[in-house]
Length: 388
Image 1 (cartoon, rainbow, N blue to C red):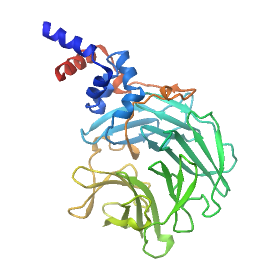
Image 2 (cartoon, rainbow, N blue to C red; image 1 turned 45 degrees about the vertical axis):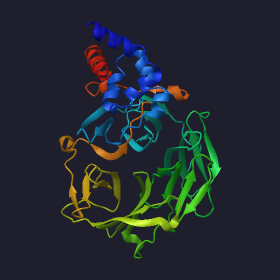
Image 3 (cartoon, rainbow, N blue to C red; image 1 turned 45 degrees about the horizontal axis):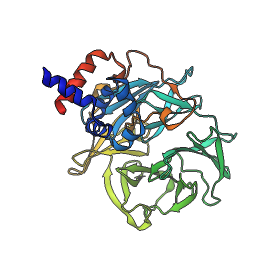
Image 4 (cartoon, rainbow, N blue to C red; image 1 turned 180 degrees about the horizontal axis):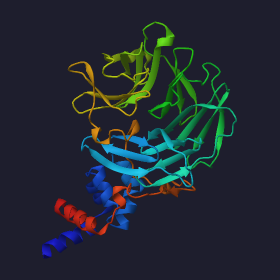
């Protein structure tokens, strides 16, 4: 008994650096449980030092109405579920993108939000100061200052607008490049975030527009040598996959080529990473765009498709075939719009963002870490004592 007490005292008096190191070895679901142990652990996990040292693996996430679910595809179980209901809003939400653990969300009333579902926090953004219809949104983090920024491109406009979280609460206007214009290709209203930059394909020319979130300057990349053909039957999609810029070329709706830029910024480093054919029996609702999600441990590619984003597919490099995935079979008919999400425990309040509010938690859709604490507190303390 004295030995147990000694171990508990030892853990209580551990230096913060060592506590961070121990907690950082746990999976995300255990970290969420640890937030419920005591106030000091909650403050530690949601603080900046732990966030910068902890690198969780990316997960799948999907929305259905107000419900947002993050699914641990390695453990094959939900990491957590939460209701994305912002204040008095009654509109359903569309998660446009995620970056470093934060979600960029637009409801069907075109109100914009940034939220961290791991900390149940959100902030509502003011509308862009323009009457032009937005045609492009981008969300990411600058490389040096690590500021979260949103880019809003306006259709047929000579300017675009940038919003910086914690930067004064207003949109700034910057001049868009005269050539190419900011208008993206059809069906691509979200920019791909990678290396501190936002990327999208310019409509009308084979060019990739790049916006540096740190300098707020535009540059241009050349895309891979796309196969010539009738533009009507070609659909292109940029994405970031495993830390590299990729372009999906869907020819005629069934033949897919996924290009990868081996050296970021080098126009001559494009290579064909995947080439496959989609059989009508596999993807009967396929309408043009492929959305690669992540690489699995065995090297297979997990993907979804435009207007069929409630279904997962797996491309096997060994068989070179595409098959429907049963990874989320337990959620059949209850989810939509699948994307990847990397959990983050950084609090919006801790970053200095003003007017942060709490997400509504409606049972039974309660985040795991908000369940009754007493019983789990004892279990977690015992496990960590044994770890030491």
